[in-house]
Length: 192
Image (cartoon, rainbow, N blue to C red; front, top):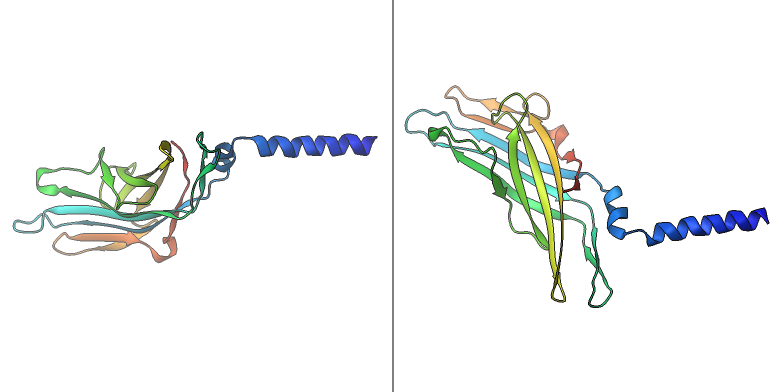
């Protein structure tokens, strides 16, 4: 009798985990995104020099997503793992003392949605040597005439001397990038 009660409890626990929402199950087990190719640069600011500063990055999402069940045919709407935000680039004109803060910067087009990047203050003020990057992965797919969407977001801190290195020349031109041991750099996603 005790064996039957224990077996019944085990079957009930297993059944309830199977019937839980696939999106909830998946969201609880998200793998870290991998940021690569982070680079930043600022010009000298001298008269006649190139007047644009920039921050570039790439990001890969190793997660697959279940966006729910299609009402038309009952199929699961799945987004495959491995989506990439490539060539995410913030570029701003330094002569007018512009900054990249508070703006949304696009990444190259991606299948089944899109990626954007935002540049944030790094906590000690903003500069091309200390900043935060927030990546948003928007999943957006049309399946049998119905749109399915979800958004995930992750932020990473990038700072010279911690996970970035590079040089500043005598003219004031500075170029920074991820240290080899920090490339790729993991960031933890969450549902937006």
